[in-house]
Image 1 (cartoon, rainbow, N blue to C red):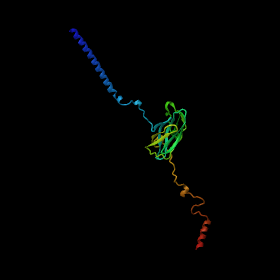
Image 2: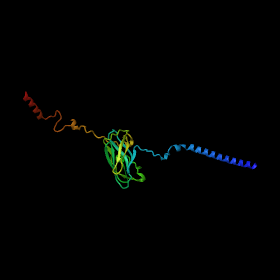
Image 3: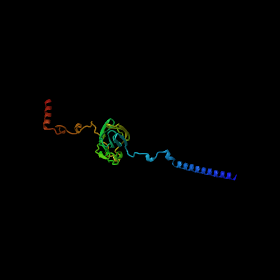
Image 4: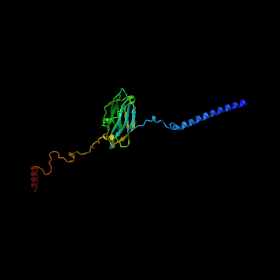
Length: 232
């Protein structure tokens, strides 16, 4: 009986030790889960890519359009700004940019980028490049202006990008004004109205051989007097 009792005591203590170990593991797991629960409920911030530019980014084929936006003060004419990056190392691309039925084209050489803001007299963004360092060569840009863009400041305007050999893509591009310091020289100059009158049409300048009032020649005065005398 003494030996059996001893065996039972050993088994009891062993089970008690196992129970304590299991409880300790469960408590530790609960603490770890409570401390890191937010990580399971939300994505890692390092995987979230946030855009910090004013414009939008979009890609069609081998062309990356970066920081695309429109500058307009009158809501009618607008200047398109952005950086066009050709990630192809072999093919030049003629990119079409369409706004409100009006289309402009920009030549983007292979493995090059075109900074339209720099072409318009703004500040270029040397940090913009294509993937894997492509598009590192800087090509000459040009002004991209739209006379009838219907671009109300503060709104989003649909812009369509396309070129031969790639599927086109559209993007809702924001419209900003030249009130911001970085864009103050980039608003397009309003087109003069075709109905405006010239000085000669308004009569503010003499045309032909006409002379100012009160300076008629003696001959013209004589002719006038002779005509009156002949009728009296």
